[in-house]
Length: 266
Ligand code: IPE
Ligand code: IPE
Ligand code: MG
View 1 (tube, rainbow, N blue to C red):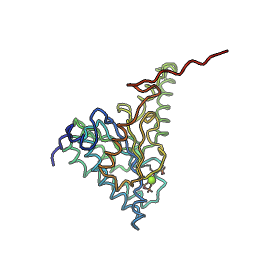
View 2: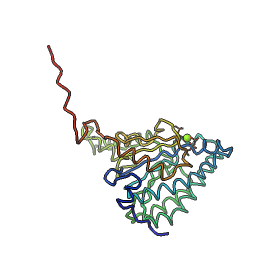
View 3: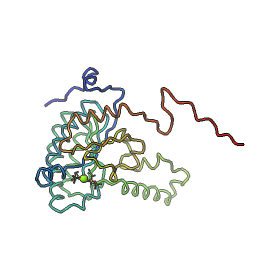
View 4: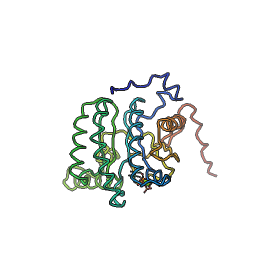
């Protein structure tokens, strides 16, 4: 398999999409694997297994759409609460994915990155992750970032600890701590913030995912379970994103409404 050419403007138009209105960074909370399996009378792990097909299709599609980054929430720092058999299956699946995906990552020219406390993962998995990161480091295509053993509160806590240590060492004064200082100490330091967050399986929550980084991200939630998520669902999310008016606290760009009249004080 060789690298698929990115979609032309005509192909994008056939999906109801426009290049200028695509997000640069999409982040996905891939949820509903267990429910998908349970609805079919299958063990929960079957949902995780099937979810890999959705991952492959989504990665390839985001790459063809020429996005800068796709971040996938694969395992949260709270997911250790799952039963031991589910955890061991997830860890084996993760290792298999990281190894088997190398060929596709190379063919698609992806840069493979990871955020999360990977130091708490098994040495075998860490070795394979490091190898996949190393092999893909010089690629110039989309960044594929996996959130593994990731939790935003823990990420922010670590950032605060590092900043506090610099203050204690006398290399930083509290007045010089800016939003950028905080952002620079997060695991996503050199990554753009997500423009669009997709969550499958209908939950209306963010489950400790990129809390700092999604301050102004657009949210799109679907009832579809992750193992059934296909590129048509992604296109639907992208069409919805294209219609959004991102104001960042200001006013709409093209037809900025006149400001509210000043309050009269008698
Ligand atoms: C998401 O699917 C995958 C992980 C959290 C690892 P779930 O396993 O959370 O599926 P549901 O939410 O129980 O259906
Ligand atoms: C979020 O899903 C984590 C991942 C998708 C990896 P969860 O299934 O863990 O979220 P909650 O428990 O429903 O909030
Ligand atoms: Mg879930």
